[in-house]
Image (cartoon, rainbow over all chains, first blue to last red; front, side):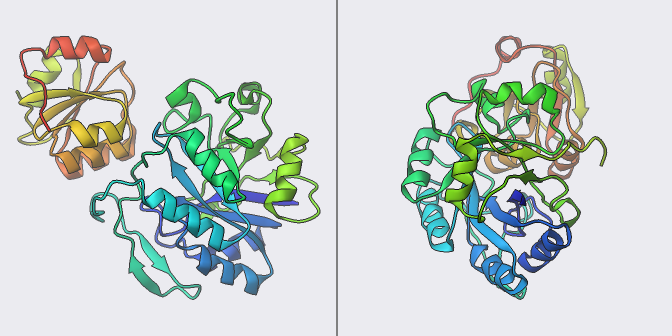
Length: 243
Length: 111
């Protein structure tokens, strides 16, 4: 089964407004994905919408958020249900700065329905870090039954390598992610023995499922993925060398 | 101190000019959440964070001169955002400490 575990919707201030849940699901199905995860910055508020889109399309979906930790490291918290993802969101929100987003500076943050109506504009600045460090975010994610992945470890900003100099060896993460352009000959050795995923980190529709991870899992659930990660049984697609 | 004067002090170059961009104090920080919480208006921000979010944080705190250290490149989206928001960007080969020393005639930024 192929899957793309890192996709942003229009709720992320830096994502294109064309990233509606229905369009994302359509692209993922067309690309032959067996499953996807929605991971907006600091928020899972568009997961109920994509859950309905995925149900209608017969696509498996995990529900998550890309948590920017106190270290300003981007990390993925993935769950089987929107309820878990929204509980994680509430916990992250409580540790966010109480400042109001200026859409002209950061971008719009619409919470939408499955059929593309805007419910409201998220007022928090989702581009900001929360006050919780990686071990605490990991503990909360796991307490809620989620998977915790270090995002794009090869990036020169917002990664475990850029902020901490390497992958923490404390067992906080279940896997580490390579970005779509990461050279695996350089970065697989730097995964420090963790299971490796590659996902699109799509912020616009053309990037959805351009790269992917593959594993022989009986079902697309966090527990099945956790077993595949523990067995180091994931394979990743080739990197993109041109855009 | 204008952005051009800041660039001269740190032996660097104004990568993105901005009309009327001045610095009357200095803040050094590489964690943007720390910058947001502690940097004050009209400071020069000395940092290695060469990405668009830095410009956004400068807009929030009222900082209009960013000094990017270690000659890190200014990516196109950061340059465009800075030009749009009136934030000048200076690039220098210096480290953060060296740049701070070079700007030592300016006082520390107060939040």
